Length: 134
Image (cartoon, rainbow, N blue to C red; front, top):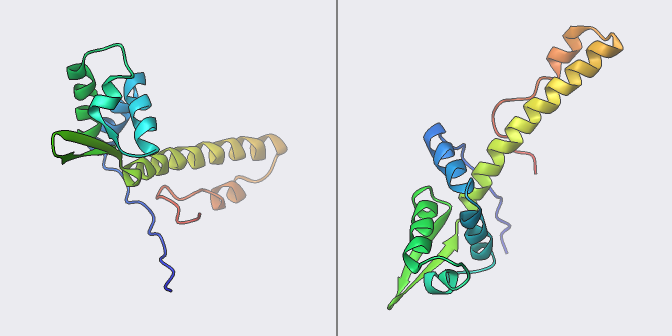
């Protein structure tokens, strides 16, 4: 048995990040994404969970599909929607990058308040590229 190592997710391009976070700004789309993370869902089954038309749910799924958060597959008359974990990992990586930068700034403030030299703070600056740490 060969162990497969996971490559870090590729960094989201700015226009892709814009589309992903615009899609996630809507509560219905976040709920659809949650539901599709547990397993493939038909658009019909999804539509039955919301007080909106089938066409409205289909439009929400289309937004999620266009930004790469879900993928649709046709099986006969039914379309199944599945979450794309790779794209979610890319969005998570971008947020983790912002968190590292924020923690760095907080660390610098702590050092300044403690009277530590600023050279030490500059040595601790995090990379602005996605980390390969688990």
